[in-house]
Amino acid sequence: MRVLIVGSGGREHALAWKLAGSPMLDQLFCAPGNPGTARVAKNIEVEAEDVKNITNWAIREQIDLVVVGPEIPLALGLADSLRLKGIKVFGPGKDGALLEGSKVWAKRQMKKWGIPTADFAVFDDFDEARHHLSRFYGGPVVIKADGLAAGKGVIVASGPAEAEQALYDILIEKAFGPAGDRVIIEQCLSGEEVSVLALCDGKDLIMLPSAQDHKAIGEKDSGPNTGGMGAYSPSPLYTAELDRKTREEVFLPLLEGFRNEKIDFRGVIYAGLMVSHNQFNVLEFNVRFGDPETQAILPRLKSDLLPLLTAAADGCFGEAKAEWFADPAVCIIMASEGYPGHYEKGFPISGIDQAEVAGDGKVSVFHAGTDLKDGQLVTAGGRVLGVTAWDKDLAGAVKYAYQAVGGIDFKGAYYRRDIAYRAL
Ligand code: AMP
Ligand code: GLY
Image: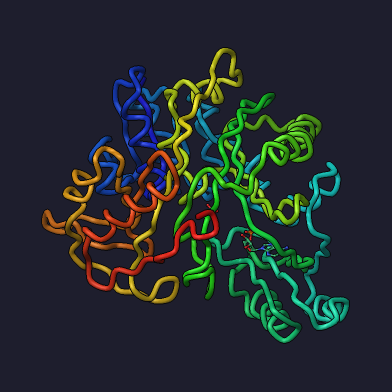
């Protein structure tokens, strides 16, 4: 098969790394990819959000399957555009992508479909929204911009002043542009977060093992949220009972809801759960693989990934099955100093190959924000690398991962030293 992966982050490198080992694969491409994907695929110079040129390129190159990594091309209708031309796609159309692209739509559907989620109200008027804050009696409250905001559209406000500021920034100052034409004011939940992903062929599900993501920049989960500073799989919090409940109370109602709305969802659904004392709520749905969860989940997949994604894209899992290694895996993000705020780019990176060799076959370094400048690997983003390791237990995986991190160097490299601490 000739396969194209769309995207350029750590998630796409992990997908490329796993797909590259498939006996069904003839050639793998990545648009636009990064220097990491270039090790296992041929990068092509088309931006992930350029729907027209990706479609034309895929037709010309007779691509058998397109795997879409990020949410924006999905929200822009890349999957619809490709399907119209008869090209198989792993990733939902615009209709299914609304589940991530509009938080208002997603929350309303969750209520309608009986999926457990925090109470909420929707506003497009600043004064009305501000008045609503009094219902929270000065306590914490969550403000969410409706549309896609590069992971920055959710503000967990500790009290009314911070919440009002967020409402002002979103509704009046248009900090997220039209993505903030509407806001959600939501009850603040406490507990621990678990990410549960399921492949979907439009009718059926294959659930993947759970993962836990560290969103905060600082140790002990302090400071502002990032795209994710590390992840591990499985989550010890995610018991067999919770797995059963997630399937029955989240994914099956979602599938039925899709059926009723005539949404043919062929891709991956990511449910972000908040869990406390065996109670759980859905915080959000994404319509793509999580980043960095994917980097911690895919090394645990014993089966070939390509037939699974192809079957989902075909709309029929049939005999396709996923088998998993019991060994846990962990991914530690090495970021640029200053991230998630302002940071500089262009610093040379060294030590990756040696760190992988020293890792005894238990380490893989996934590129996220890297670039090649005159043959030298340099930093090119906030999250630079996802250093991933696996072992017979989580403590071992964490040890291997930090050993590898210790061998990699670039100016201002920042990483959390406590990834997976809750599970150890
Ligand atoms: P979302 O994009 O909806 O997942 O929100 C991003 C992050 O904000 C989540 O991963 C949580 O850490 C936090 N968050 C979202 N909704 C809530 C909520 N209702 N209560 C507490 N934290 C939340
Ligand atoms: N790691 C969180 C996300 O992918 O949205």
